[in-house]
Amino acid sequence: MEQPTSPPRILTPAATVGLVLGILSLVLSGCFVVGLVLGIIGIVYARKGQRDLAANPHHDGKGMVTAGLVCSIIGVVLCTLQLLFWAGYLLVILVLAILGDPTVT
Image (cartoon, rainbow, N blue to C red; front, side, top):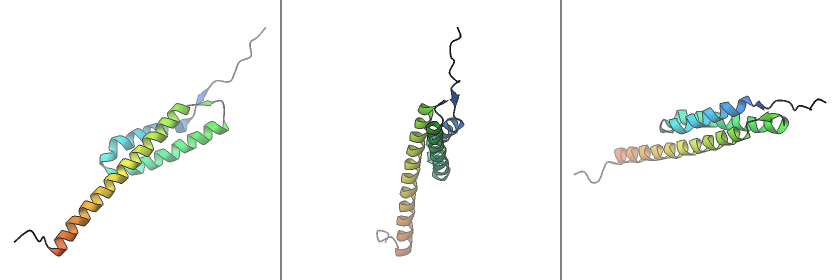
């Protein structure tokens, strides 16, 4: 008597792409523009992977999708904080340059 076989588990392609982009957004968060773009694209692919997993129960990669989403979100947050810091720093420098530094005599 033959045993029924289940279909093979297929890794959803969006899981790998989302994870790689999430890790790259963390690594490249020092260059906040590149890290921010990669993080946003990583979030898009991770969400696509989540939808793919929900639609196709025979697909695999839930852990990779979750890790990619988390890494992408952390990368976006780090890049955004760094962008805000440097924008504030530049604003202070410009204000001091326009108004003149009162400490210099």
